[in-house]
Image 1 (cartoon, one colour):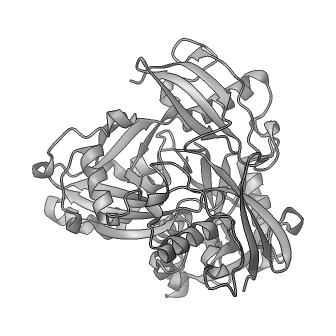
Image 2 (cartoon, each protein chain N blue to C red; image 1 turned 30 degrees about the horizontal axis):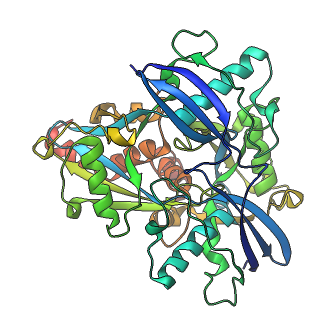
Length: 240
Length: 240
């Protein structure tokens, strides 16, 4: 269980990670402008362990998710609604506060910021193919060493259309216990603190639609994709 | 066809829409910090027209998507790779440039920024339920008037985990031609310029997995969801 405390929120006047730009343009003769941020494209990987018949997900504390839940809890306490703090698309200023997420009654528990996700990573190494980048993420985050050639491309889509416009490509990787060469867990020196989680095949659809389990759409979509495209293969072999 | 020109990109020093914050926190005793942005939660709606047996999507020019494609085309022209412009998570500065997307050979066509999406909107009206907000979006964007009570909740998930942490709830709405009370198209006074698009049921799965059709994951996921959960109902009634 994560221990999160000493939380302090400050305005971010200059960030190496979030750099807003403004584009002015003419659309069908009307001048418009739009604020956006540039981010790298990304890959995500649905990993299925054929030895254990389970999906391999990652689980981690996400500060942005936690802050969302924190703000909602603040709004409930003060009686104001979240929507009152800003206009459409405007960011609301979370109150500057220092607190202990475990002991302070005003703060949600650390678990409020933990999400289940597909293994994923940014496309930030120009000399590597998408498959190679996906392979590295599977190794670093989940500890399985599979050749890039065994990654099956599922599809691609825009992971954001309002703020970033970035593209994500999703892969499917079958692994076995023989491919397991490490613990995974990400790169601690880069601040990653990732827990590798197994979801048994027979529990996957309940997991996907259980709204009490915080997750990304990629988890839900990929589980359904597997159910539609791969299940027959494993139903036959296991008599599930 | 959209006409996009006179494009000019400038750094965005102050934005009403993108307001970065920084949170400092202690995770299991280690001090960390994270830059994030607060946005509203959102709703999205898979709309199925039972008269025409087609899905109703929206299609619009997305500046952030266009800028992504623009930067890729610039990187290809100069011989540098997109990934070279910044470190992990760092935003790269698009070059300040003024140009005509239709006639300037350096610029991708406007269609590079157009995406197909589910009808969707921000949860920014605190006195309304998620269903009521979804209902309003269906009316404003797509021109169908359906009671909120007829919206079926599919599921919810985090639409972002790195930067925003916001939650999205997805609904399913069956409409008929009798519910059609307007053209849709969004709120022009709010800068929305939305085209309503029909995707016939029998083409939906090809549409979902055709990577040449730019779209969000929500479109793909919801089409598969329909395929798994609703198709039998419409197969029986139409002998498709």
